[in-house]
Image 1 (cartoon, rainbow, N blue to C red):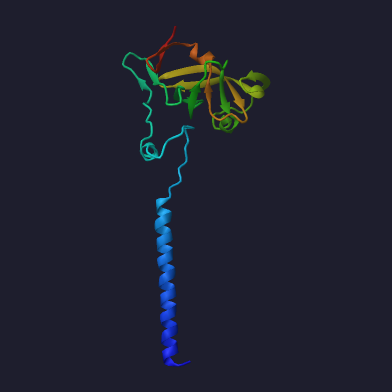
Image 2 (image 1 turned 180 degrees about the horizontal axis):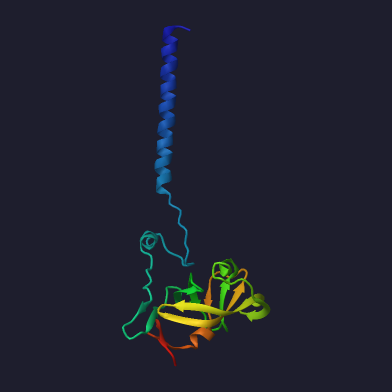
Length: 186
C-alpha cells in the first residue's frame, strides 16, 4: 500500500470517526430533551405544569406537642393522619384508622417490636377475612403519650402499622381545621 493510500485511508477513518462522534453527540442532545416522568399521586398533569410539580412536593407539617399537653397531628396530603411512635420501643409511623378495632403491625415488624408469639385469630377487615396474630401487653408510644397494656395484631401483607380505635378511645380526640388533636384522658 502506498503512502498516499495510507493517508487517504487514515483521513477516511478520521472522517468516519468524526461522523460517528457527531452523530452520537446529536443523538445525545436529542435524548437530553426527552424527559420521562413518573407520577406517584395518580393525578394527571399537563406538560405546562409537570416541571413545576416535579420541583414542588407537598411538605406535610409535623405533629407537635403543645404547651397544654395536647398532641396536634396535621392531616397529610392523602387525607389520612399519621403518628410517629413506637411499639415496645421500636420506631414506627402509624396510620390512624378509626375503623380498626385495635392496632395492627405488619409481620415484618413483629420481631423488632418485641412480639415473640401471638394468639391466631381470623378477623374481618375492609380487605376481607384475614389471619392475624394477637399479642397482649404491648406498650405503644405516640408523641408524649404512652399506652401500656395495648393489644397489637400482626398481619402478613399489611403495608404499614395501623393505630386502632382501642388506643384512640383512651384519649379525647378532636378533629378540626385539618388537624387531629389528642388530649390526655376523657
